[in-house]
Structure formats: C-alpha cells, structure tokens
Image (tube, rainbow, N blue to C red; front, side):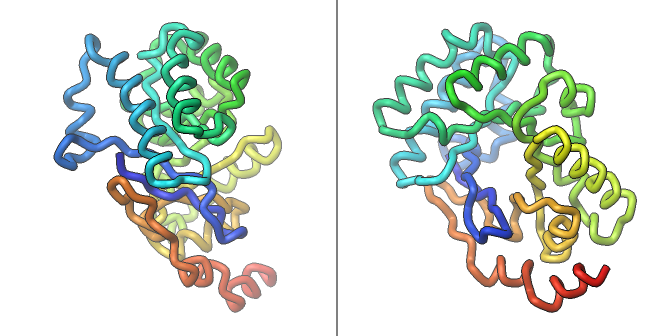
Length: 243
C-alpha cells in the first residue's frame, strides 16, 4: 500500500490517509486492477482491506484511514466485514477511524444492495464515500441512490477550475447542495495553490492531491506547513473577503 493524505486546509492538518493499492514490485493501481477478474474479485477486495489496515498500523497512522472497496464484491455486509473487524481488533486500529470509498472502477450493478451495505457500515461506525464523483460511473444518479457521508470530486472536474467558470460554478453548486444535506466534500487531484484557493473560496476545505503530497509507499508523507500557508496567505484572504 501507498498512502496519500487528505487534508483539512483551514485546520492545517491531515484528516485522513487514503490507502492506494500497488503491485508486488510497486506497480501502479491500474496494473493491479487489470489482474482483477470476477473470479478473484472478492478475495482481492478482502485482501486489500486487511493489507491497508495492517499497513496503517505498522506505519503508526493516528488519523482516519480511507480504504477503497469494490461494491460488486460485497454480497453480504455482515459476512464480508468480518475480516476487517478481526484485523482492526488484532492491530488495535479504531473502527471509527475507517472510511470506505466506493470506487468507480466498475459500474454498480445493484444500487439498492450497495445502499444496504452503506447503511450496514454506518451501523459499525464506518464512514462511507463515493469516489471520483463527476467521472466514469460516479454520476449524480449514483450519488442520489447511495447517499454516502462523503463525496470525493474527481480531478477531471477540479483541474483548472480557478480558470474555468464552468468548472468552478459546477463545484459551487455541489458545495451548496452538500451544505444543505450534510454531505462532506473532498476535492481530489489538487495540483496548484490557485486551485486550492478557488476551492476555499467555494467553501470546500478538504482536499487531496499532489500539491499537498504525493503518495508514499508504506509511509505517511507529511504536508509542509508552507503549503497550508500559501493557501491561506493574508493577501488572498483579504481579496476573498472583499469579493
């Protein structure tokens, strides 16, 4: 596993680390997912969860841990979560620090069943997120059907939104909707301070991307304080207040 921070810019702290699967020799996630078949999907999903929790405990993670899961690999929430619960107990990782992200690597075949999974996970104290919103299979229809705790906006939407009023207005509408229904928004793929500042002006404070830190293999990459300071510089805050 590699880990990448999800930050709360206003609090200048790491909110969570996302566990990103890698191959046995460091191959990227795309290589790994190319090996997944319907026959080994369940085993792959279970192995990723256990590996992520063990790795998080090994590197001394004290924040939340965000784990991707394949919704079509879960057939019964109570049965499929047993290995997760057992592993967390073995390594002493608190259950209320676990976030499960529904990936968009595959279309959700049964939305009602996945909604039941989300409801069951909440019963265990887990937080759920819809990953890569705005790209691939993660559509507004899926968001409405699943109603997770968090929506992670795909980098394809975030890229250059400080220079594109279509993108910024789309994210603005999502932020307003999220505030009304109690949905947390995380912006993925933030690569520039201008993107981060634009997101802050729209009320989005949770972000993830290369601007803050690249994923680190079997380690927790720190976020330099000057990265936060650039986002929250006094001159920029003053301009936003005037606008």
